[in-house]
Amino acid sequence: MPTGVPTVTLDQEINPWEAQNARFDFAARKLNLDEGLWKLLRSPAREIIVHFPVPMDDGHIEMFTGFRVQHSIARGPGKGGVRYSPDVTLDEMRALASWMTWKCAVVNIPFGGAKGGVICDPKKMSKGELERMTRRYTSELIDSIGPEKDVLAPDMNTNEQTMAWIMDTYSMHMGHTVTSVVTGKPLNIGGSRGRLEATGRGVMVACDESLRYLNMDREGCRVVIQGFGNVGSNAARLMKDHGYTIVGVAELDGGLYNSSGIDVHQLNEYKYRNGSILGFRGAEAVPNEELLTEDCEILIPAATENVITSRNADKIKARIVVEGANGPTTAVADEILAEKRIFIVPDILANAGGVTASYFEWVQDRQGYFWKESIVNEQLETILRESFDDVVRYAEAHNVNNRIAAYMLAIDRVAITIRARGKN
Ligand code: NAD
Image (cartoon, rainbow, N blue to C red; front, side):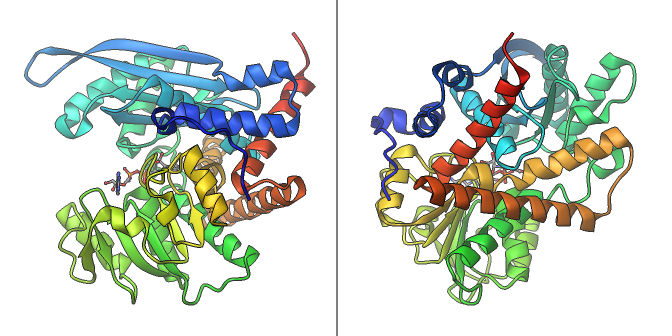
């Protein structure tokens, strides 16, 4: 079913902010959103840019640029990850922040959307340099973040340790421990059981629900996963344990294929020991990009943005695409996949397991009462199954694809909140 998403130029195609705007405008038009709300929700509420110094190990001072974009705080505090990468841009932050607003609304949790990042190359920095950079970045944002304002979390190249440094820096400024300023923390300082694998678990729920919706079986269901990091490896591990056959795994430096299924537990250990999946004996080495177009029932892009574009979308053979990563499919590629009648579970639904468990972590920190892992997993699965159902019903009712349905549902929920809060 064609989506009617307006075509963007090739240059615009891989700009994530343009990609979000194309989907937002189409969904807002379908909803007949009034002009004022349209303008309000299209732009981020606040964009913070900070330039700050960090003493490096050799004694010289290096300047870094960091961002925090708060797209909307209408439904609750801003919520979103912090990314460290040489490629971080303001447009990317804007897109990711608005996706967080829509994601939190799709799973109906009381958060707005935000995102942050620092332009840096973490692979070339020592642990001490990363700690000093993280602490200074946090200090620069001190008045704009907090459990009731904006709650940070890990994203690409940040982890539990980064969150512990942010939490500690924020707490030093406040004069007491404030665990709920970040989620994705280590367990012993207020983290939640089940958070580490929550996004992968949500991806599996999205796969289960897709199969159920399309009357397909897990048995014989071949899965290809791109990205074997937090999201991809946890999804792979959980899915293998639940009867899926993981036939392909693609990483930055190469891919693996085995038509009888890859033992992803062994692959996990192999990657942990060797730092790469290359050389793993239980599968054949294949080029990374070939795996995306491999014959399979489910394709899970779980690495990064813009991997399914106008250049390869027509070659995708999967019946179902479940977007573990944020923004893996461009708006132009969406059109092509729709023509091929490929069933897409969009990122703002498929990878929402992470933010849902983050919400549980924030709740537990504020209560000072910590749940058993089985409770976290059970509540997570319930929320994701219900959200999947909401999205596919919305798609049927409005005759749109799942992505546009998820945007419409989310925009509608945020708009209802803003209307209820009244004019000021
Ligand atoms: P990660 O850094 O743990 O893993 C990403 C993996 O993908 C790495 O192993 C990397 O080598 C690989 N990779 C990067 N580019 C690749 C490419 N072009 N081809 C093949 N492999 C590639 O990151 P993550 O936390 O797993 O996040 C992955 C994606 O999921 C990102 O888009 C992130 O924003 C999104 N996401 C993550 C979470 C979470 O809880 N971690 C939640 C929601 C969304």
